[in-house]
Image 1 (cartoon, helix red, strand yellow):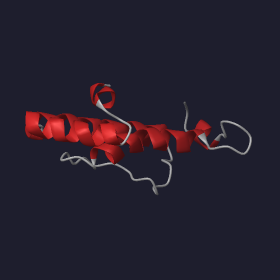
Image 2 (cartoon, helix red, strand yellow; image 1 turned 120 degrees about the vertical axis):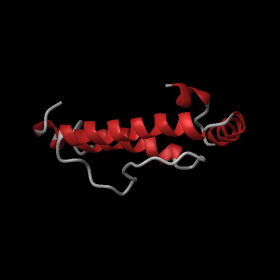
Image 3 (cartoon, rainbow, N blue to C red; image 1 turned 180 degrees about the vertical axis):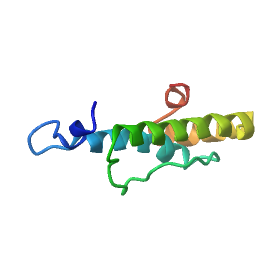
Image 4 (cartoon, rainbow, N blue to C red; image 1 turned 30 degrees about the horizontal axis):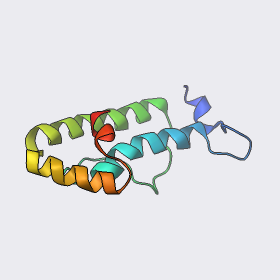
Length: 98
C-alpha cells in the first residue's frame, strides 16, 4: 500500500483503500470503547488518513494503548463482564484474542 493508493477505489463506485484502512483502525477503538477499557483512536465519522505512515501510527498507538489497558485494568471480573457484552454484540473472545 502506498500513499497514492489510498484514494484508489477497490471497485467502481466503491470505497477507497484509505477508507477501508480507516475501518480497520477504527475497529480497535470502537469495540473496546464500549467496555471498561479506554483507548485513543478515530471514530466512525473520521476522515480517512492521508498517508500510510498515519495509518500505521494510529493503529500502533491504539494497539499499544490497548495492551497497557489490558495489563493494568482488566481483572477477571471485568474480563467476564466485557466478554458478555462483546458476545451480545457479535464479537466475543475471538476478537479479544486476535
